[in-house]
Amino acid sequence: MLQERGWAEARRVKPEPAAFELRPSEVTLTDEQALVVEAITRSLGGFTAHLLYGVTGSGKTEVYLRAIAAALAGGGQALVLVPEIALTPQLVDRFRRRFSAGVVVMHSALSGTERRDAWRSAHGGRARIVIGTRSAVFTSLPRLSLVVVDEEHDASYKQHEGFRYSARDLAVWRAQRADVPIVLGSATPSLESLENAAQSRYTKLVLPKRPGTADAPRLALVDLRRHAVEQGLSQPAMQAIGRHLAAGGQVIVFLNRRGYAPALFCSACGWVAPCAHCDANMTLHRRAAQLRCHHCGAVQAVPLTCGSCGQPLNPVGQGTERVEETLTRLFPAAPLARLDRDTATARGAMQSVLDRVHSGAARILVGTQMLTKGHHFPEVSLVVILDADQGLFASDFRATERLAQTITQVAGRAGRAARPGEVLIQTAFPEHPLLTRLITDGYDGFAASALEERRQAGWPPYSRLAMLRAEARNAAGLDAFLRAAAAQGQGSSDPKILGPAPALIARRADHFRAHLLIESATRSALQRFLARWLPQVETLAGPAGLRWSIDVDPLEVD
Image (cartoon, helix red, strand yellow):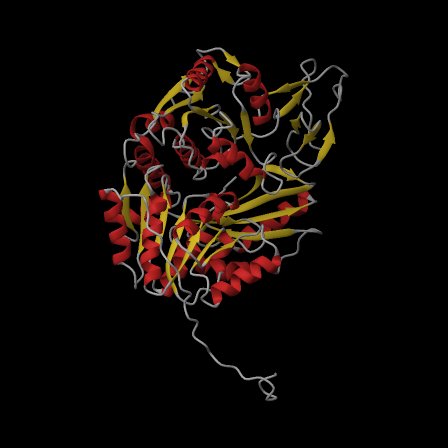
C-alpha cells in the first residue's frame, strides 16, 4: 500500500555477516573426533545428514564447535537446537567462550522483546550462531550454512499441542532445502535415525569412547527381590553411596517420579486419594502440604483421614521429595540438592542447583529426567537408578526405547573425569531381556534387538503411523464421532484404521479422551489417505465441545 502511493520504496539488501573471532581451544581432538570434524567440514556447501553417534562424554560439543567454526569462516550462519531450555545457559556459555560475538538465544522463556531482537539479529546476519529449543527451527537465517540438533532422540523436539511438528525432522527438511549439512548428535540415537543410517539416508559418524583416561562406567543390576529396601533404597545402593562419598566423589540418585509419594492410601479399606477430574490418583507433595494431579494440575489440601472409612492414611511409594528426605537422614554430613520440576520452577533455580553441584557444595543430587539432558558433572562417580521397571511393561511400543535411552543417558553422568564410574540399576526383574542386553551389549546391542522386534511387528520405522486424537465431555458422543470417522476411511487395506480406543488416562480434566490409529506401509500412502480422509472428518457432527487433532509420526501411542 505505501509503496503503491509512492510513500515508501522497497529494496532487497543482502545482509553482511557480522565479524567474529574464534578463540583457540584448550582441547586436543582425539583421532576419532578429528575424523568426524573433517567429515562434517568436507560436506559444507551441500546437503548431507550426519548422524553423530557418540557415547556420553565423548566430546560431541567440541565437534560441534569445530564444525561451526568452519561454517562461519566461510561467512555462514549456524543453527543449534537443544531439547530443553535448561541446557541452553551452559551451552551458550561454552559457545561464547569460543566465539567473540554473534551468539544469540531463542526459546520460550525469553520476553517478547528479547525474542524479537534475537530474530532480527539472525535475519539481519548480525547473529552468526542461533542456539535454541524446538521453535528456533523457524528462525530466519539467510546465510544458513550448518544445522546441529543435539540429543536428537529427545522427545522434547516434538510439539504436542496446537501446531504439531517435530523440530528434528523439520531441521532435516530445512537443511535439505537450504542445501547445507545437518548434524544429528546423540549417545542414544532414535531407532528411526539408526535405520536411516543403515539405509544410507544418513551418514553415520561414531565417537566410540571418551577422551583421555575416562572409561565408560561399570553397570550392575541390583535385584530388589533379594535385598532389603528402605524407602526405595536397597542395601547395596546405600553401601555404595557411603563408599563413594567417603572417597570424595559425588552421587546422583535418579527417580523419574516427582513429589513425595504417588498415592495416599488407606490400609483399612483400600481407598486411594483420587483426582476428581481425571482417571488418576493424586500425588502427595508433603512439603507443600498438598495433593496434586500431575495430569490436569488440580490441587487440594491433604486429608487427615480416609474419605471412605475415616481411618488414617499412609503415603505409598516414593517420589524425589521422599528420597531426598531419606538420604538426608541416612547421610546427614553430605549436602544434598534436588532437581525436578518442583524445584526448578523459579527463574534461575535450576542453574543455582547445577552451580552447587559443579562447585562441590552439593555431594548428592536427586532428580528426575532433567538429569539425563547433557549435563557434565566431572566429580560424579556413582549413579543409582532407583526404579528401572517403570517402562518395562508399558503399553506404548516406544516405552522400552525411552527406558533404554534414559538408563544410558543418566548412567553416562558417572565417571567423566579420572574417577572410575559405577552405576547401580535397581530392578525387580533383573532377568528382563532389555536390562540384560543393556548390561552386556550396551545401547548398540539393545538397538539392534529392538529394531529387529519392530521389523517383525511392522512398527515404525518399518511402517508409518498417524493418530486422530479427540476429546469431549460426552463419552458416548465422542465414541460415535470416532466410529463415524473410522467408517469414512474404510475400504482399503493400506492404511488400516484401528480403534477407536480410549487413551491410557481416559478422562483428564473432565474430558473423555480416545483415538484412532492409522497405520500404513509407506509415508506416501499415508499422506494420500490423510489428504482424502481429513476433509471428510471435518464435515462430521460431534458432541458439544468436541476437540480433535491429527498427529503424524506420534511419539506416544497409548
